[in-house]
Length: 143
Image (cartoon, rainbow, N blue to C red; front, side, top):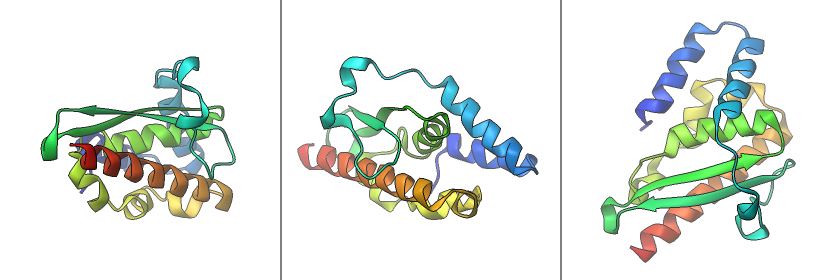
């Protein structure tokens, strides 16, 4: 159940044979993301469980079951910013009630990330996915 933006990433990865090129592409995606304002880099937005510093700020559009999930994110590590961009493509615009149905690990495995990230980075991705699911659940409950 991936978004069109995530499918575009998967198609790009199909064309990139070398993992160096794929890492470079992920880093470029991170560089293209807007920076999170410093005022939002506070303990309340920090993602726990990541080796790098990571912050997520949810943005929910609409109300009720049709409310759409989105977030802004940032990190002090370029590869992690890229991973945030990948997660943004996976979750952005999805109804908050559908966020739990997205199997992030399976989708990321389609990109080969499950085999090419260090265990520390993999743990960080799991922490980011957990935070996304928590933010979406809170938004769904409030709707």
